[in-house]
Length: 171
Image (cartoon, rainbow, N blue to C red; front, side):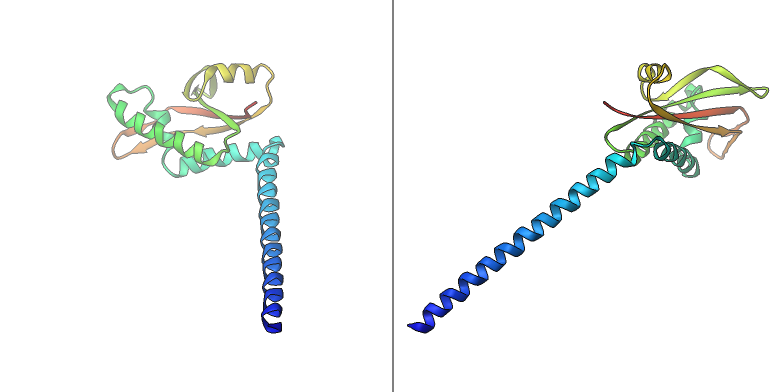
């Protein structure tokens, strides 16, 4: 009888220990989740980090072969399906990089004789949001120069563009 009472005591102690370990693990996981959330939110709170992200996005998109088809095929109706395909890929790529609390707009200016044309065409995003951002909103812009585009499928293009990616935090 004494042995049964002793086993019950040990079993109770084991259950208490298991409960304490479980609670400790849940607290550690909760702290890790909070830390990860804070890092995500604070990584974009300084504009330098957001600016570097915008530059990296444009560079990587060009190296991946997504940026130039979107820019150079914009005006050519005969490549409408291809333009839409590359535009959607580029949009998906940008969405996969930026967090949910960041909005963006991609525009391009033509460059004629070394002078940037003031008029631009919008490729991805809202021009309304861009206008409010340009009138004093807080965000960043990354500039990227494209000098030409040569493609076995689409041909050779020699027009120059200034591509701008605007990033800002949503409210």
